[in-house]
Length: 162
Length: 162
DNA sequence: GAAGGAGCATTGACGCGTCAATCACTTGGG
DNA sequence: CCCAAGTGATTGACGCGTCAATGCTCCTTC
Image (cartoon, rainbow over all chains, first blue to last red):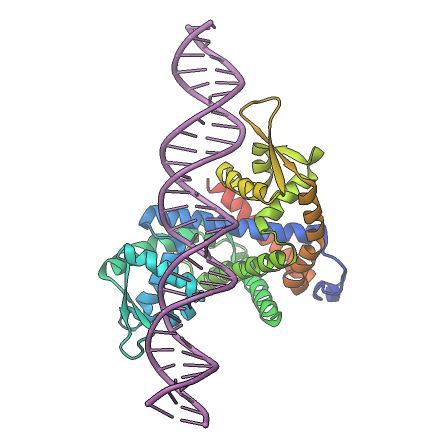
């Protein structure tokens, strides 16, 4: 295979090769295992789920540690309903509070509680360490570059496809 | 950065760069989106979930289209309990059957039903097409090679780390 | 200022995944 | 032979994610 062929997508070929399918499976399996380990470690260190973490991160970066529910959903790219369910569970645990929105009576504002902020702060460093341990430490700079390129390609492709 | 540095893992550095963290997030988000789309398409075309598909694939490749529950769990790398719950749901839908094992009264054998085999057969081609469409068509051969290398590195790293 | 459509958020139902507990059976040491 | 430890599999509880349906409120238009 010459250089030109190596840089042309395989779109025109009839089917994926078994090698390509194996890479697909490995992508799915390996990322699943990564998520699994990170989630387990996060839970062990802070009793937070990855979802909790995403919500708390967005809130802690927001002005006044509060966001409209819809803004929060947009920030972390979640469906409304998923967020609503999740906020219900987090509210029970005292991590966040939901208050009526002053400017729109339909809306709710989600506020980070002191407790939530404290727990999130305590979780960040260990979590970053865990990501480094399981993922960051494995790859060299060239691999990071290559992965970045691949992910950009996939993202673009996904956006194009509807 | 010279060539030697580019090929040395970043393990010794204190923290991941924000670029590296962004790549991590993109990896998680992009693969999630890929799984989401594939699952939706599979469900639309065959009313199967990705889990159903994995189970049916393993069974349809097995001798006599049947496997001991524990062998099936090993084949698709699932926890026993997860498999047990899933088989319960699949049995209700008539995709599989559970029968007592002749050689070990504790055990169960999982058998693919005719209906299950039929539905699986009908699902394979569209599913392969969907994987190609969303994933395979995006990448060129060089990117496949790079991804293969990255995934092998990650897998090795994960296995090493416990 | 009333009607109707759009937007914000929640809810219920259901499939899925994990953890801990449990039950039934097998096996091996005494 | 018996019992203790180990193994195969299931169950229940609970958190999580999606879909479809719902309830309010806001906004536009007439």
